[in-house]
Amino acid sequence: MKPDLRTTWKREILVGDGAMGTYLYQLGFPVGISYEEFNLLRPDVIGDIHRRYLDAGARLLETNTFSANYYKLSKFGLEAKVEDINRAAVRIAKQAAGDRAYVAGAVGSIRGGKRANVNAQELGSYFEQHIAALLTEGVDALLFETFYDLEEMRIALGRARKLTDIPVICQFAVDQIGRTLDGFTIPEAFGALVQEGADVLGFNCHSGPKGIMAVMAGVGGPLEVPMSVFPNAGLADYIDGEYVYGATPEYFGECARSFADLGARLIGGCCGTTPEHIAAMATALEGYAVAPLANETKLPEPRSSVAVTLKERPTTATAGIDGEDRDLSSLTELVKQRHTVIVELDPPRDLDIGKFMEGAAALKEAGVDALTLADNSLAVTRMSNMALGHLVQSQLGLRPLVHIACRDRNLIGTQSHMMGFDALGIDHVLAVTGDPARFGDLPGASSVYDLTSFEIIRMIKQLNDGISFSGKPLKQKAKFVVGAAFNPNVKHLHKAVERLEKKIASGADYIMTQPVYDRELIVAIKQATAHLDVPIFIGIMPLASGKNAEYLHNEVPGIQLSDDVRKRMEGLQGEEGRAMGVEIAKELLDTAMEHFNGIYLMTPFMFYEMNVALMNYVREKSKPSSAHLSRFT
Image 1 (tube, rainbow, N blue to C red):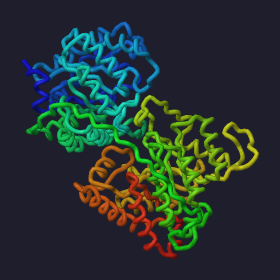
Image 2 (image 1 turned 120 degrees about the vertical axis):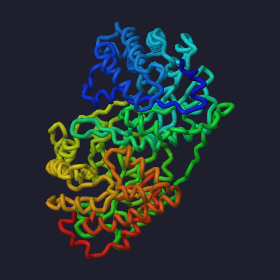
Image 3 (image 1 turned 60 degrees about the vertical axis):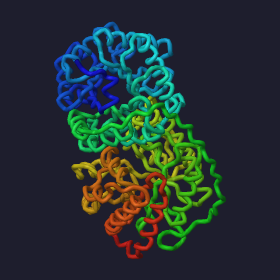
Image 4 (image 1 turned 30 degrees about the vertical axis):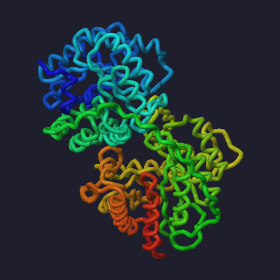
């Protein structure tokens, strides 16, 4: 007999299992099919996966039933098999678990972030049918996962409590913003669910460990109920036709104790995790002594926003890095003459632009040649870069360089957007594909992708010929200078350069790289791109802390840190961490400026002072002789 589950997770850490769907994908099973039907068609495969997680150290197995509800199964013509699929899933999991592990019936969100696609009455019916089938075979608990709004979670929990008193685990996928999609703070949502009978509260999916840690820290202290965490293995990257998750098992092992320190009693993995990730966490948690739970749930009041009034700023141009007035010609012309610096400053996620404008003004004063603004990077909703680009240009006299992503706009919206930039006199753009919407703060949003990065470059340049996307003539020609993104942090640099050549053939005028943290790689990039006749701006982003370094290395696609950099940043935080981050960035600049005239600085967490310091360093180091650099790349 296994101990009572409610007692178990109050006195020890219970290790959960990892992904099912993405693991099946990694094992070679195609997407676009119902993995839940495997409970009937391939019970041997599902049972084997359960056993792999069990052998790795998992002591709670989830049934293969995340989407085994009427609504989701109907898309495959399987709506009549809801009960059969769920009952088979429980039998498979229980046979694998034996007395070694608990079995939780997995119940996934039906809305999936699309708040209007299924009404409350339908949700209640679908959840009740799903839960009843799981209960028939005797699961030890129910696990509600990847929910985005409190309303849907309350409906599911209400139907569960109507049918059973077994433990219920409630997990949200909201780590980017710390609120549910229907507007509740996490403390508010947790408080409501405790009152309605939830036994464990937590988070899963969406991004990776760091995002979940951040929102856990905002809960406001220990709860009277245990917490659970099942993070993704970072964000997925699409490489050579396959989705790949970058967070390693070793990284998950390091994060496991941090989760436990923040109050987690059930720790597992979601998308991209494997038995190796679970084994690393199980090993790291051996012998961990848990702290007692709080006597009562702490629900802190939401923080009040502070209004910031913008100061009047002069609009006259300031000196560039060479001490002369900023040359307002194209960056591609400017970079031929001297070291030219672009600094990225992210638009805010809220309506307060005070910090952003203060940072932009400070960077202008430091002599940057352009301020670049991303287009909802990582698919997280931010203020329009068109609006902020116009303010930077009109109020500060600073050149904006705006990103435009293929993700958010169809052909109509993209051309309209570009016409708006032209009307505002914003003529420097960076064309990017854009991260899929499902990884951002509105996972139910559509990813459009009418255009590839190659096509959007070509079509923007077509506007320069006075030709619209439809082929009709326009009354005048645009004057866009179009950049393309380049990720050199890959195993085979020559393949990345071949892709870059295609972007240049499509019309790219300059290149901006992902951040590079290896001086040898900078030299390798120079050698691999020496034949190209467009300028390259080498990306450098100062690290803010040791945790920031590990997050970038393990969870963000396209960024790899050297072992030396990670070791130097290890354990550092606050001013000490930022100081080391600036020092490392200066060393990278030493090499970058030797080989490239183009420098692209990225600003972490709005710490624009770090890039002001780096800009001053570039100013001091820059010499008139920099113009001799071969092909100014």
